Length: 390
Image 1 (cartoon, rainbow, N blue to C red):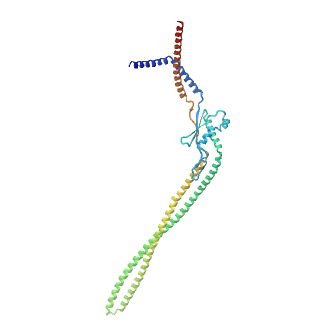
Image 2 (image 1 turned 90 degrees about the vertical axis):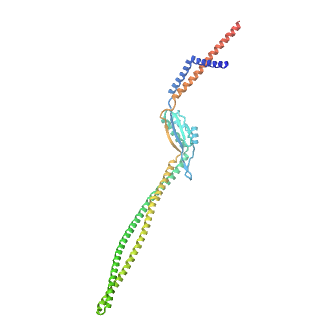
Image 3 (image 1 turned 90 degrees about the horizontal axis):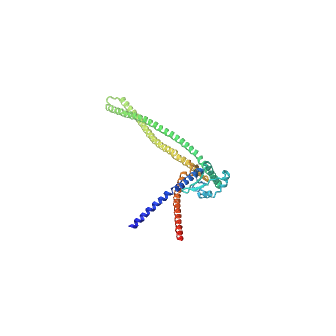
C-alpha cells in the first residue's frame, strides 16, 4: 500500500514538473507558435488565389449497331491516358506561355463521365485552356469524324423520308373526309327516302281505309237491294218487271264496282307491303352506311393519327440519334468557382498554429533536457575534480 501511494505521489510530482517546464518555457512556445502563424499568414496572402475550373465530358456516339445501340470509338480511360501523357502541352505553351496549369482527369463514380479540372488565378483563361484541350482531342480522333459524317448523312435521309410520308397521311385524311361526306349525303338521301315512303304509305293507308269503307257501304246497299229485289220477286202480282230489272242492274253494278274496288284495295296493299320492304331495305343500307362512316372515322381519327404519331416519334428518335453523333459530348461546359478555392487561408493559419504549438512544446522539453543535462554533466566533472585533488 505504501509503494502504491509513493508511485502515485511520484506521478503527481512528475506532472507538476512538466507543467513547471512548460511555464518556464512559455515564451519559447509562444514565440514559435506566433512565428508559424505569422509565416503562414504571410504565405497565405502572398500566394496568388486560384480558382477551380472544371468541365465534364463523356465519350460521344460515333455510330449505331443493328439494334440501334450507340457505339463509342474511344473510352474514358483513353482520354485520361491522353491527358496524362500531355501531348497538348507544346501547343498550349505556344499559345498561353510557359505558365500552364496542371490539368487533372478524374473519372466519375459510374465510369461514364470524366471531369477535367485545373486551378488557375485566371478563370477565363482556364476555361479556354480546357476547351482547347477538348478540341485537340477531337483533332486526334478525327478518324471518327468521317464515320460520323457518313452516319449523319444516312440519318438525315431517313428523317427526310419520314417527313415526306406525313403529307401522305394528310392526303389520306382528305380522301376519308370526302368518302365520309359522300356516305353522309347517301345517309341523308336514304333517310329522306324513308320519310317520303312513310308519307306515301300513310296516303295509301288512308286510301285503303276509304276504299274499305266504300266497299262496306256498297255491300250494305247491295244486300238491301237484293232484299228488295227478292221481295219484289215474291210479290209478282203487281207485275213490276221493270223494277226487277232495275234492281238486278243496280245490284250487278254494285257488285262489279265493289269487285273493282276490291282489286284496287289489293293493289294498294301490295304497294304498302312493297314500300314497307323498301323501307326495311333502306334501313339496312343506312346501317351499312353508318358502319362504313364509323369505320372511316375510326381510321381517320385513330389509325391514321396513330400512324402520324408513330412517324413523328420515329423522326424524334432519328433527330435524337443525329444530335448524339459527336466524338466527345461536353456534358458540362467549362465553368469556374465563384470564389478562389486555393489557398485555404484559414486552414493554413490553423495548421501552422497547431504545428507551431506542438513544435514549441517539443523544443521547450528539449531545451529543458539540454539545460538539465549540462548541469548534471558539470556537477559530475566537479565531483571528479574534487576526487582527484583530494
